Length: 114
Image 1 (cartoon, rainbow, N blue to C red):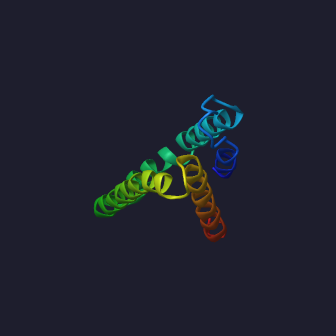
Image 2: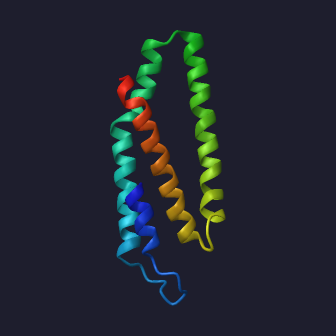
């Protein structure tokens, strides 16, 4: 995510440069790599863990919490992309960088617990 954010800053800001360049390709590639990594690692693990470990009431609460946070993230990302910076490319870069920093903090805080 951090690399996708950095590459978004390399994209040209003027209107004459509407052509697809190296940085925009790299943003797409890094986003797809992130999605593929999540789909084969943590994505399905959550649902298996919840159904096997937790009792029925705990499962309900955990699934509801998961969907609430998904709705929050899905609602915040377009606002962050459009609201940060002068144009959407700068907003997209800061959005990726903010999420990368938050993920790094979570990894540092919770890595020793497992």
